[in-house]
Image (cartoon, rainbow, N blue to C red; front, side):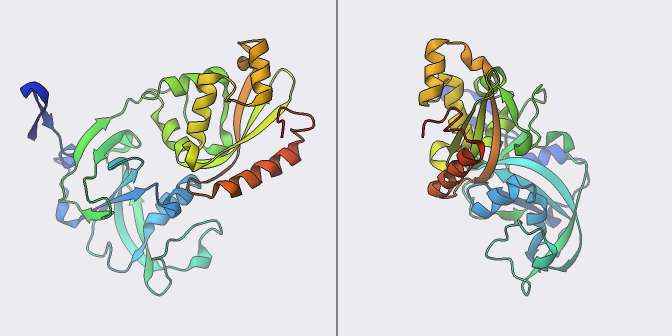
Length: 295
């Protein structure tokens, strides 16, 4: 374990990720570390659809050929890497695009004549650390696949306790009170920030007192759905005209609001395309004529 100097001569220990697996008889020369960067559109699209493990299994013929284990991380910001899992490498088979889900998004390097699908079996190694353990990938973020002997500094292990669990985008159903709690307690609900920051989308605010709807959208320029919803947590109305009128008349009226997601898109999706879907949902729900949208 190394040591690092801090201000005023203070020092702290630097723990390496590999140290967490000491005693597990891992041959690090036969391990690959991979980091999926959410700023890459293909990664974001497959991540939001639950295809990240499928995505990482498609590689060129030689990528994991002399490899016993793959350890996967997700890059959510800067040079960080959020632990996803340790996978035992099995056999490979030809990559055939037609055998994958229609909404699976291959990247430019995936071709049937150049790629194979590796059998990657998730192990129970550090299973309780999934989405909690964060490393510093280092300066070479462009090198998304590195040897297991490349030491990675452990940045943090996030708390396990969260009374509000994120399950999937289509199951998001939050009261204003819960949304406010999540936004103002980011350390405890880090997964919510990661998931909602990773996507653009069209969302729905329902006035549970009257049944009226407000349809809104959030693009990557706004920090995704997380950035937009954070505004609602802070202002109660997000600057929307009819919502603002309700809050002006009754400062606590926000407690009648319920937040859900109608459709998600990759964070880099053109904002004009997102706005087109917003208008479509306004028409479907008649939220201008009978709801809380004013245009």
